[in-house]
Length: 302
Image 1 (cartoon, rainbow, N blue to C red):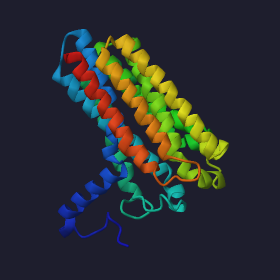
Image 2 (cartoon, one colour):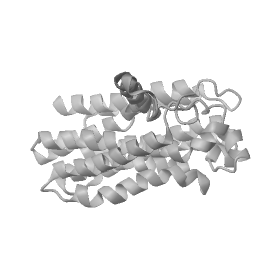
Image 3 (spheres, one colour):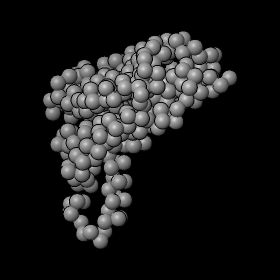
């Protein structure tokens, strides 16, 4: 197979387009939909609290979210490329399959990392975003090594995404309060729960490869129970967020719907049947994140 970086120059434009498409697939750009709505909801509440909207803040939030997530996902693919090649479920990913070279993904990771740090300058004169940018990025990238030493890796990822609403609030207000913290806890328990569900697919491979995960350590049946408990905690945190944000009955009704969606998600995944994990992982969770943003906006308007 030809190296994507060494094809003739006459094919440069189609190659660049094809490479960009592969990079978007590598980082699963569509999955940005999981964390971005929470950052936007925190931003809207922050602007509502502050009584001031700046287009630079919105631009900064969007750029920081895209760059940070892209850097973290690309770095994860680099760190995991050898394990991905050995795992039948992931052997078709872009680096093991030869669709993207290691050099290209390293360059992409570096560009996104610099882009994330540079984007925090849009929040000036608030200096907290630029001060916190490097340690935040280090924590996000550090997740890629978590499976090497702790079965709590799912909650490292959850903590990384938990930063999104808290960081958005700090970027806009320069302070922190219970509203973004509770929303961050919602994200933490939600992501931790559904990442455990997703990891059940690799329980056997992780165990045989000496990689750590809750399904590999506790078994799939126990892992599903832990994921369910995590989502119960999410609902509790969601009620706390509703209280501290001062939202109304519409959002409270939405919490009930979200709880029912989570029940359905867990009904789809059984210890002896993981065939519908992807439906539970993407479709339902995308509905929850977008739905929560819409509910929050409508609740504030009415």
